[in-house]
Image (cartoon, rainbow, N blue to C red):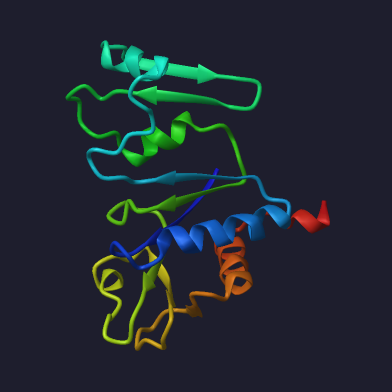
Length: 169
């Protein structure tokens, strides 16, 4: 499975870019999954729902399933935050996994930079930053893309990740 990331500080537009890249990549025939790093207290369940009650009562994992989708919730219950490679191992096989966040992990990624006064800063200390997406030109020795040039960014990810050309199959 190929992995490629979007990194940057909060508010730079990582989610916006990711949700614009997904339809472009899927339109090209790629199966894409995502992993998003969240902060400590996020919740995907609703108090009062059965699945929430199962989890709150102490279940280690709770799976919810229907004819439309299924979801697995795993409680760390004081254990360390899982490593990215452990999370990747839980995913079904796809062509590409887009990672949002996990900016300190060792996968290749694009750094997103917003605002003329906001210089890219992650690339200096992270050899896995392989390009910049920004709303203004920046002075770095890396490929650069306008953050709204979705086709060009998708082309770069496909080429850089060495994804098989879906049009030739």
